[in-house]
Length: 381
Image (cartoon, rainbow, N blue to C red):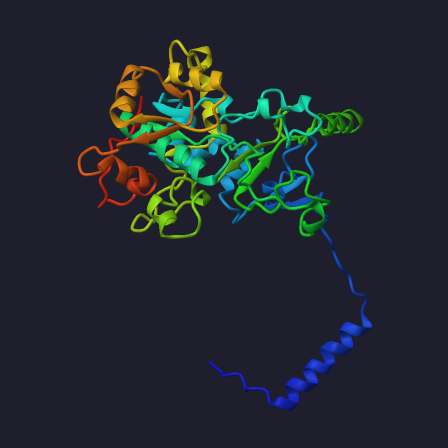
């Protein structure tokens, strides 16, 4: 093999000058992609896809913060893709059509009743605020990252994270004028909140305007979302704690991507937790039998009714023993709906076992040194 002679500095300089002269003598052509044609995942998080017609014809979600959540929330994820993730909750539910026991918060706790009746659903009246619109992030974490996992653990159920009320005061907001990187303006009011995926319409006026656009420009490219969906928010499970040791102890593994589990490079990280959108799809498949019914499948209905009547804004406190008894009462139901945000006290289970597993809920599935609970049955039906 003949070795190529290294070029001298003078030869390299002459070559550079030749290329510059050639470039200057030829026309420059620039290709641009407007954001309404191909949109980055950040526009999806900020709600740019969550209207119909959407603000983009094609979307790019690679390396987005939990791209499965992002695409699912906007109705742009085909759940048949879970065929590629065997031995996961999502594969069992959506690829095999299996029934898996799930616990979730009652949908009414997250959503404001008829918010599109208000001029602006981001600032609904106080009487319409849902129970999970808690004043502090600490209370929201107590209900969502502790009370809900405790119910899943004692009952051997998978859990589904709830929607986060978009008007929750602990969510960060940013004026439209400051959202310079966001397409047009900050229509959701949450462009400073990078943890949140926002989907739907901010007001009745916006929903009407988009309906007029659909009528004037009929197309098959509209997002698969209800035409009157109020603004709906989700916090990614792996972003719900601040970036600290606490976050990693809880486990960033409920909704991550494939191949990110330590020591389990082939583990599909769609995980063992559902989003609110997933449990809605599951309940719809099960039909009326899975719809929330205080007489059949709602946990703590009496306590929830009392809290609602009194207009309370906080959590109801139950002991571990009470939680176990209530979940045992409803053990035959495919979905158990928690009737009110829970604070579980006295989470002992022998030397603090339940409290430990609550704090490590996502981590426990993949950390074989941790004390694991009984996994929901995912075997073939």
